[in-house]
Image 1 (spheres, rainbow, N blue to C red):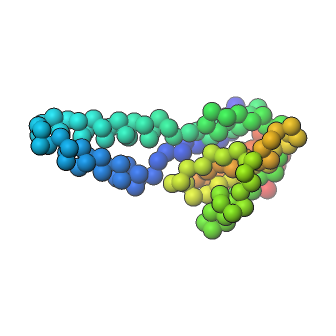
Image 2: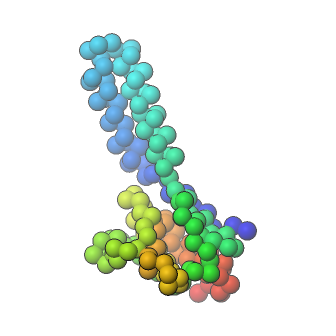
Image 3: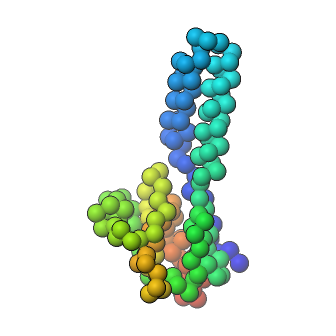
Length: 150
């Protein structure tokens, strides 16, 4: 059973900034052929959007595991969780970051959830994942572990 699902879609400003490929392409192709320039600009922009969408990882919590992108973590190995946002989130992603931590960070998603790993053989002490709803993700992990949410 799935307790939580979230897709880390790109922020709207990323689609707008990616649209800069259109005038850049027109600048190159318009002197050669205007119609070809328009077609190439549209195709390149749509290709960039398709790449942004296909590279958007999902966070999924089931009864047995946490899936963050392509990585999987059994629920039995999930330890304490802490959510951070704003300045605290930036500190967790920067100055406080343990170099051994496993990361699924997206720059357009401010909040993060820190998930301690209970496996002593795992070189990563914790996972740090971007989430627009870190408290709901933490609650889903607690529910999967059989804990009562706080």
